[in-house]
Image (cartoon, rainbow, N blue to C red):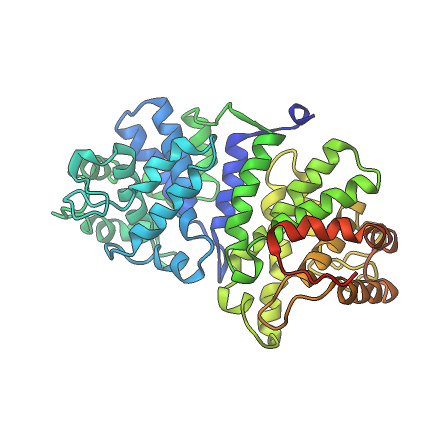
Length: 414
């Protein structure tokens, strides 16, 4: 019954945008600040309300094509006109085009690094480049020049000088920016916490479109590919986890709708891994304490990101608690058995089971027998739920088939 579960489009996009903001220093604000700047420019240029909403949503997601690659993710926010910036714009376009709901923002994202004076892979130049892309290009370049260590008004002239006689940017958009720049409030909004929410309300660009559970599932499946793209060893881990989690949940008495919510939680449980450098995720040897501390952050960020979506509290808990242990020794919240909901217990078992059957940089995939031996040992140690593991063990061949559709790595050993 998909239609009994609705989420506002803006809320979901804003949460996914926060996932794109994960960095080595925590959650940064590149996308949200770019959205603030874009909104100001769009309002100054008096573009249509529909275009303004598309522009803001595109700004919130504009670097989605670089999300899975740590080096490229940080490269695109610091360099300007190197040809490599076109790669993530095109990748982002391809990702967004997979969703009927996100298609409207795909075009602005695709061309948001196209130079006004030409020389672009697209072959476009000048006003052939979509207006929203030209606005986003300028907004993006303003934001990356903002230094948090200096008062924003002291940076005004330096930032504006970047656009002096610069043929890369649309001179009409730049002229509107220069008019905006005379207002101190424009600059204050760039660095103010929550400014994008204020501007959305003021300009009435809070989307009334809602995603039902089917929409959310489709979008989450797309985003799970980005999450798992952080490593060649996890290319379908979230999908595998979602399938096993949903099946176990139904076997444990969850309703059909709860099973679909569990599927969502499985798809998004590792969204916080977008903040972990690829070299840590793919390290073939033992992690140092500092590296493991970084790994321990990912379920915390998964929880924080998903909890921000109104109506997602249960899904956020299921996903965010998937590394908690019944004896209280898990992370990141150190919950004990009483505080860990059944959904999280199911997701934890599914996560371990699927991970053990998948290859990792430090080991080959385990057989079913080897994996279940490890899992039962964790039950005996008081880490994971015996009832969930019993249900898994009784149906292990069926669960294996859910994974084997994609993985092709499971040995026939049971």
